[in-house]
Length: 147
Figure: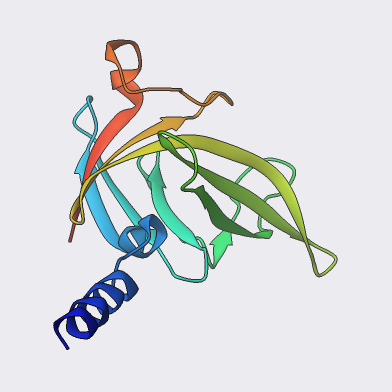
């Protein structure tokens, strides 16, 4: 009887373990090294809304301003790879062209889950992904807290 109870408790506790993606889903905010407030919203259907250079981008309904794609609708989605250390995240810019999704670029990031309510993220806005958190990349690292 005790053995069965122990197995039951172990099984049910494992079934409640959250994945990193499940922890990531929600609203987060933080301040970068330059004092700029940043907000990120991760949805369970892989959309990300975020502040880039002071502008908030709605991942599900983003209208491009300026350039050759001015006025066109775009999306911002994300992919997370929990098998890597540190965990990697790609924010994927997608244009809607003739009714189809066309990838236009990626912001490459790494994540450090400090707790369920605190994440460190390093954003590679120059097209490269950091391999670790260090002094050399602290300018592009933000500590996010769940709101």
